[in-house]
Image (cartoon, rainbow, N blue to C red):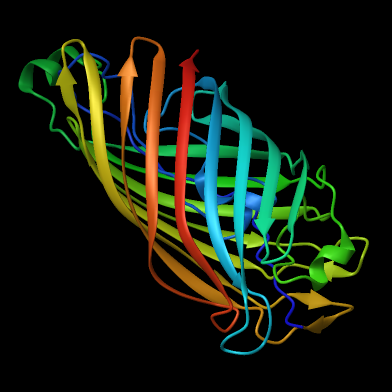
Length: 326
């Protein structure tokens, strides 16, 4: 039987700001989120750590992912349908002017249906904490003659370009069940049982209400007490957005592309065959800001994938969130 798992770490990171915006709510910056293949079963995956508005918040997030796995090694083998529901409390908390922390606390509710039975597991998932450092670039402006004579100090103007670096941990707070790794989809877990490291970097440009974000993250995954280690993971995400005023509120639709590349799973130090792969998703969604509340939704559909020799396929993904800015 083919072993399978794509346990994901928390992944997310993007930059941005409503730089040089003359409109209301110009304190909102922009960032993106992406979806990792099996992170839904462990940590919430690459759905990210924030909304499009790059502001401090506390909120609730719900994600749904549907997969289809082949239950056997033959072309006509039956398949199982898997439904992964993740409920999260998440937050962004300021530490210093250019530094902040993000945290997610997920609860997993996972279901799968076979031809003759169904299975369900649920419980606390893996908690994630990441620290972020943001570098915003200033415009180069020549001082006027009056400013030179009076040595006047002017306020810096930002160019709209920014970089962000993130470093964090995913903690083994969710339960890992060794017996589930021998099923059709061993990624069907509420936790990985390991402590993993997250390294992220990204670039963002925003001007008025238009913006582009490109990010990348690498997940260095540890071995759990069962001598089981999920494969390291490289993720990318790109989004283009444009905001519109709706009265005094802001509606911001976006389109994007995200993807993941997975290395092989290891057990007892040996790499398991055909447990690597990749996937690419096209995303479309929108975010609506009402005073201090932010409502967002995202739909992701596969554009290309090769997961475990084609035995596992992602079908669709939905994401909804409600945040309160602080």
